[in-house]
Image (cartoon, rainbow, N blue to C red; front, side):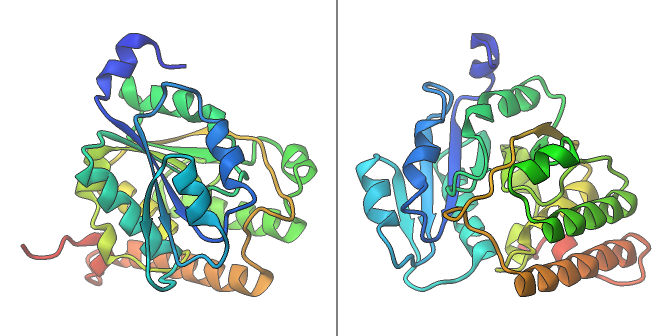
Length: 256
Protein backbone atom coordinates (compact mmCIF):
# COMPACT_ATOMS: atom_id res chain seq x y z
CA UNK A 1 0.00 0.00 0.00
CA UNK A 2 1.27 3.51 -0.77
CA UNK A 3 2.40 5.47 2.25
CA UNK A 4 1.90 9.25 2.42
CA UNK A 5 5.33 10.03 0.99
CA UNK A 6 4.81 7.73 -1.97
CA UNK A 7 1.32 9.06 -2.61
CA UNK A 8 2.79 12.57 -2.88
CA UNK A 9 5.14 11.28 -5.58
CA UNK A 10 2.11 11.37 -7.85
CA UNK A 11 0.21 14.63 -7.72
CA UNK A 12 -2.63 13.19 -9.78
CA UNK A 13 -3.51 9.50 -10.14
CA UNK A 14 -6.21 8.64 -12.66
CA UNK A 15 -7.95 5.35 -13.34
CA UNK A 16 -9.16 4.83 -16.90
CA UNK A 17 -11.76 2.27 -17.91
CA UNK A 18 -12.40 1.33 -21.54
CA UNK A 19 -16.00 0.17 -21.31
CA UNK A 20 -18.47 -1.68 -23.48
CA UNK A 21 -21.73 -3.06 -22.05
CA UNK A 22 -20.45 -3.17 -18.47
CA UNK A 23 -23.68 -2.34 -16.62
CA UNK A 24 -23.64 -5.54 -14.53
CA UNK A 25 -20.07 -5.23 -13.26
CA UNK A 26 -19.08 -1.56 -13.33
CA UNK A 27 -20.28 -0.59 -9.86
CA UNK A 28 -18.61 -3.59 -8.20
CA UNK A 29 -15.33 -2.71 -9.88
CA UNK A 30 -15.57 0.91 -8.72
CA UNK A 31 -16.57 0.05 -5.15
CA UNK A 32 -13.43 -2.06 -4.69
CA UNK A 33 -11.04 0.82 -5.45
CA UNK A 34 -9.51 1.79 -2.07
CA UNK A 35 -10.68 5.25 -0.94
CA UNK A 36 -8.06 7.97 -1.44
CA UNK A 37 -5.91 5.89 -3.78
CA UNK A 38 -6.93 7.73 -6.97
CA UNK A 39 -7.99 11.28 -7.83
CA UNK A 40 -10.28 10.68 -10.79
CA UNK A 41 -11.89 7.83 -12.72
CA UNK A 42 -12.42 8.30 -16.44
CA UNK A 43 -14.69 5.88 -18.28
CA UNK A 44 -14.79 5.86 -22.05
CA UNK A 45 -17.86 4.15 -23.40
CA UNK A 46 -17.55 2.54 -26.82
CA UNK A 47 -21.20 2.96 -27.86
CA UNK A 48 -22.65 0.51 -25.33
CA UNK A 49 -26.21 -0.67 -25.85
CA UNK A 50 -26.92 -1.06 -22.13
CA UNK A 51 -26.95 1.30 -19.09
CA UNK A 52 -23.16 1.60 -18.71
CA UNK A 53 -23.14 5.38 -19.25
CA UNK A 54 -26.09 5.99 -16.94
CA UNK A 55 -24.50 3.98 -14.12
CA UNK A 56 -21.10 5.61 -14.60
CA UNK A 57 -22.64 9.07 -14.37
CA UNK A 58 -24.54 8.14 -11.20
CA UNK A 59 -21.25 6.92 -9.68
CA UNK A 60 -19.69 10.32 -10.37
CA UNK A 61 -17.20 9.18 -12.97
CA UNK A 62 -15.90 11.36 -15.78
CA UNK A 63 -17.65 9.84 -18.79
CA UNK A 64 -16.64 10.12 -22.44
CA UNK A 65 -18.73 8.50 -25.17
CA UNK A 66 -17.93 7.28 -28.65
CA UNK A 67 -20.82 7.92 -31.01
CA UNK A 68 -20.19 4.57 -32.69
CA UNK A 69 -18.31 1.45 -31.70
CA UNK A 70 -14.67 1.99 -32.62
CA UNK A 71 -12.96 -0.97 -30.95
CA UNK A 72 -11.06 -1.79 -27.78
CA UNK A 73 -7.80 -0.19 -28.90
CA UNK A 74 -9.51 3.01 -30.01
CA UNK A 75 -11.25 3.10 -26.64
CA UNK A 76 -7.90 2.98 -24.83
CA UNK A 77 -6.53 5.77 -27.01
CA UNK A 78 -9.40 7.99 -25.92
CA UNK A 79 -8.82 6.99 -22.28
CA UNK A 80 -5.12 7.85 -22.31
CA UNK A 81 -5.62 11.11 -24.20
CA UNK A 82 -8.17 12.17 -21.60
CA UNK A 83 -5.94 11.17 -18.67
CA UNK A 84 -3.00 13.15 -20.03
CA UNK A 85 -5.18 16.19 -20.63
CA UNK A 86 -6.43 15.89 -17.05
CA UNK A 87 -2.87 16.10 -15.74
CA UNK A 88 -2.32 12.50 -14.67
CA UNK A 89 1.22 11.57 -13.70
CA UNK A 90 0.20 7.97 -13.03
CA UNK A 91 -2.52 6.09 -14.92
CA UNK A 92 -4.14 2.76 -14.12
CA UNK A 93 -6.10 1.01 -16.84
CA UNK A 94 -8.54 -1.58 -15.53
CA UNK A 95 -11.38 -3.31 -17.32
CA UNK A 96 -14.74 -2.51 -15.72
CA UNK A 97 -15.92 -6.13 -16.02
CA UNK A 98 -14.84 -7.12 -12.49
CA UNK A 99 -12.41 -9.69 -13.90
CA UNK A 100 -9.52 -7.88 -12.19
CA UNK A 101 -9.28 -6.94 -8.52
CA UNK A 102 -9.20 -3.15 -8.25
CA UNK A 103 -8.22 -3.38 -4.56
CA UNK A 104 -4.67 -3.95 -5.82
CA UNK A 105 -4.36 -0.49 -7.40
CA UNK A 106 -2.30 1.02 -4.52
CA UNK A 107 0.17 -1.87 -4.64
CA UNK A 108 0.71 -1.51 -8.37
CA UNK A 109 1.20 2.23 -7.90
CA UNK A 110 3.81 1.54 -5.22
CA UNK A 111 6.16 -0.02 -7.77
CA UNK A 112 5.84 3.08 -9.94
CA UNK A 113 6.21 5.49 -7.01
CA UNK A 114 9.43 3.83 -5.82
CA UNK A 115 10.75 3.89 -9.42
CA UNK A 116 11.19 0.12 -9.48
CA UNK A 117 9.06 -0.09 -12.64
CA UNK A 118 7.59 2.20 -15.27
CA UNK A 119 4.85 -0.26 -16.25
CA UNK A 120 3.03 -2.74 -14.02
CA UNK A 121 0.80 -5.56 -15.26
CA UNK A 122 -1.61 -7.66 -13.24
CA UNK A 123 -0.74 -11.32 -13.75
CA UNK A 124 -3.59 -13.84 -13.62
CA UNK A 125 -1.19 -16.78 -13.89
CA UNK A 126 0.39 -17.10 -10.46
CA UNK A 127 -0.29 -20.83 -10.76
CA UNK A 128 -2.11 -23.08 -13.22
CA UNK A 129 -4.41 -24.26 -10.44
CA UNK A 130 -5.50 -20.74 -9.50
CA UNK A 131 -6.06 -19.68 -13.10
CA UNK A 132 -8.24 -22.68 -13.91
CA UNK A 133 -10.04 -22.64 -10.56
CA UNK A 134 -10.85 -18.98 -11.22
CA UNK A 135 -12.70 -20.02 -14.35
CA UNK A 136 -10.16 -19.35 -17.11
CA UNK A 137 -11.08 -21.66 -20.01
CA UNK A 138 -8.42 -24.25 -20.78
CA UNK A 139 -7.94 -23.01 -24.35
CA UNK A 140 -7.37 -19.48 -23.05
CA UNK A 141 -4.89 -20.73 -20.48
CA UNK A 142 -2.92 -22.68 -23.10
CA UNK A 143 -2.92 -19.81 -25.58
CA UNK A 144 -1.95 -17.31 -22.87
CA UNK A 145 0.95 -19.48 -21.72
CA UNK A 146 2.15 -20.13 -25.27
CA UNK A 147 1.97 -16.51 -26.38
CA UNK A 148 3.48 -15.17 -23.15
CA UNK A 149 6.47 -17.55 -23.39
CA UNK A 150 7.06 -16.48 -26.98
CA UNK A 151 6.70 -12.78 -26.16
CA UNK A 152 9.12 -13.08 -23.25
CA UNK A 153 11.68 -14.67 -25.57
CA UNK A 154 11.29 -12.08 -28.33
CA UNK A 155 11.08 -9.04 -26.06
CA UNK A 156 13.67 -10.18 -23.50
CA UNK A 157 11.26 -10.05 -20.57
CA UNK A 158 10.22 -12.45 -17.81
CA UNK A 159 6.55 -11.59 -17.27
CA UNK A 160 3.77 -13.89 -16.16
CA UNK A 161 0.87 -12.54 -18.25
CA UNK A 162 1.29 -10.32 -21.30
CA UNK A 163 -2.46 -10.17 -21.88
CA UNK A 164 -3.78 -8.58 -18.73
CA UNK A 165 -6.52 -5.96 -18.53
CA UNK A 166 -4.97 -4.46 -15.38
CA UNK A 167 -2.09 -2.09 -16.16
CA UNK A 168 -0.38 0.89 -14.52
CA UNK A 169 1.82 3.45 -16.27
CA UNK A 170 3.77 6.54 -15.43
CA UNK A 171 2.97 9.66 -17.40
CA UNK A 172 6.33 9.43 -19.16
CA UNK A 173 5.35 6.08 -20.66
CA UNK A 174 2.18 7.48 -22.22
CA UNK A 175 3.94 10.61 -23.44
CA UNK A 176 6.72 8.57 -25.06
CA UNK A 177 4.94 5.66 -26.70
CA UNK A 178 3.25 6.51 -30.04
CA UNK A 179 0.11 4.58 -29.14
CA UNK A 180 -1.98 6.39 -31.75
CA UNK A 181 -0.07 4.34 -34.32
CA UNK A 182 -1.54 1.17 -32.85
CA UNK A 183 -4.49 -0.98 -33.84
CA UNK A 184 -8.03 -0.04 -32.80
CA UNK A 185 -8.64 -3.70 -31.95
CA UNK A 186 -7.52 -6.01 -29.13
CA UNK A 187 -3.92 -6.32 -30.35
CA UNK A 188 -3.41 -2.73 -29.16
CA UNK A 189 -2.29 -4.18 -25.81
CA UNK A 190 0.45 -6.31 -27.38
CA UNK A 191 1.66 -3.43 -29.51
CA UNK A 192 1.80 -1.17 -26.46
CA UNK A 193 4.01 -3.57 -24.49
CA UNK A 194 6.29 -4.15 -27.47
CA UNK A 195 6.64 -0.37 -27.74
CA UNK A 196 7.37 -0.10 -24.01
CA UNK A 197 10.24 -2.57 -24.41
CA UNK A 198 11.48 -0.82 -27.55
CA UNK A 199 11.63 2.52 -25.74
CA UNK A 200 13.47 1.00 -22.78
CA UNK A 201 10.80 1.13 -20.07
CA UNK A 202 10.99 -1.27 -17.11
CA UNK A 203 8.02 -3.65 -16.94
CA UNK A 204 6.98 -5.71 -13.93
CA UNK A 205 3.93 -7.61 -12.74
CA UNK A 206 1.91 -8.31 -9.62
CA UNK A 207 -0.44 -11.27 -9.06
CA UNK A 208 -4.17 -10.67 -9.42
CA UNK A 209 -6.92 -13.24 -8.78
CA UNK A 210 -8.52 -14.80 -11.83
CA UNK A 211 -12.23 -14.13 -12.22
CA UNK A 212 -14.16 -15.60 -15.12
CA UNK A 213 -17.95 -15.57 -15.00
CA UNK A 214 -20.89 -15.00 -17.31
CA UNK A 215 -21.00 -11.21 -16.93
CA UNK A 216 -17.26 -10.68 -17.46
CA UNK A 217 -16.39 -9.60 -20.98
CA UNK A 218 -14.34 -12.09 -22.96
CA UNK A 219 -13.53 -12.62 -26.60
CA UNK A 220 -14.71 -15.86 -28.20
CA UNK A 221 -12.54 -18.59 -29.69
CA UNK A 222 -12.51 -17.12 -33.20
CA UNK A 223 -11.53 -13.66 -31.95
CA UNK A 224 -8.93 -15.27 -29.68
CA UNK A 225 -7.40 -17.03 -32.69
CA UNK A 226 -7.29 -13.76 -34.64
CA UNK A 227 -5.74 -12.04 -31.63
CA UNK A 228 -3.08 -14.76 -31.32
CA UNK A 229 -2.10 -14.44 -34.98
CA UNK A 230 -2.00 -10.65 -34.64
CA UNK A 231 0.28 -11.00 -31.61
CA UNK A 232 2.68 -13.12 -33.65
CA UNK A 233 2.71 -10.42 -36.32
CA UNK A 234 3.60 -7.77 -33.72
CA UNK A 235 6.55 -9.88 -32.54
CA UNK A 236 7.68 -10.20 -36.15
CA UNK A 237 7.51 -6.43 -36.59
CA UNK A 238 9.54 -5.93 -33.40
CA UNK A 239 12.31 -8.25 -34.64
CA UNK A 240 12.42 -6.70 -38.11
CA UNK A 241 12.46 -3.14 -36.77
CA UNK A 242 15.15 -3.86 -34.17
CA UNK A 243 17.35 -5.44 -36.84
CA UNK A 244 16.75 -2.52 -39.23
CA UNK A 245 15.16 -4.83 -41.78
CA UNK A 246 11.92 -2.86 -41.85
CA UNK A 247 10.50 0.43 -40.62
CA UNK A 248 7.39 -0.30 -38.61
CA UNK A 249 5.09 2.62 -37.83
CA UNK A 250 4.21 1.47 -34.32
CA UNK A 251 7.82 2.01 -33.23
CA UNK A 252 8.17 5.43 -34.81
CA UNK A 253 6.79 8.70 -33.57
CA UNK A 254 4.90 10.66 -36.24
CA UNK A 255 6.63 13.72 -37.62
CA UNK A 256 5.62 16.86 -35.77
